[in-house]
Length: 264
Image (cartoon, rainbow, N blue to C red; front, side, top):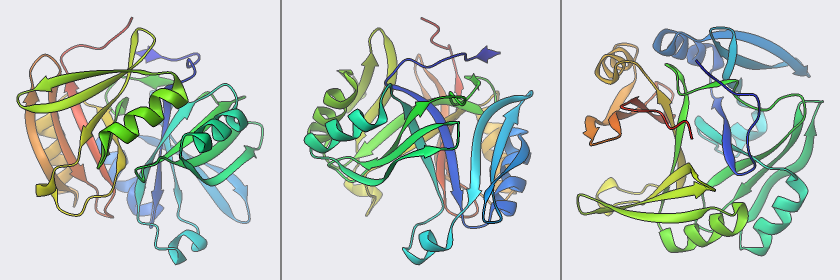
């Protein structure tokens, strides 16, 4: 099991589902990934549902607030990046052309949070850890393993994230498609690719990948549970076999059977 004790600044550390119906979402993901849930009260009758794998925190979800529904926020997966100082990161993001949606704000004694918007319209959360570092297990079945930016402007997005997190960008030709791997020091941090016009009206967004033991089996199971397969399953030579899917409430995510796990 790939247990985590801490995350270097600039590392994706947490995935969170904002659900229109959290009970339906729990049923879907518990059957798909084998997650167990524990509800943590957060005030005003609301709970934050922590998902665990083998007793280790793997992700979370919560029932969408009425204000979010009124604003037309869809069910979606949110990605969190660990930072050493949220307030300074927000200032830097704004200086690079980003916007702020929420925060910075304290989340009890767990950490400090901000939700920002990059210059191409993709939302990403910044997390300054205190008692909660993020996922305690990664790269195992049903846990976070990769984050990928789908954007309408790779140049603008690349300049923003390299400036904000100190990442370096390595562009690769993957069978005629350009794919950028962001490096956080010597460690891969995230990927980026340009949204193809054939996909339709897709806004810039961060896609969450979960590791699975059997990509095809997981895709079939998702379909039987009311999900929809959007792409794949298909192989990425030297990386693994993946599929992009949508849960019954419309949240898009990906699963991948990795050929190897980076441990450097």
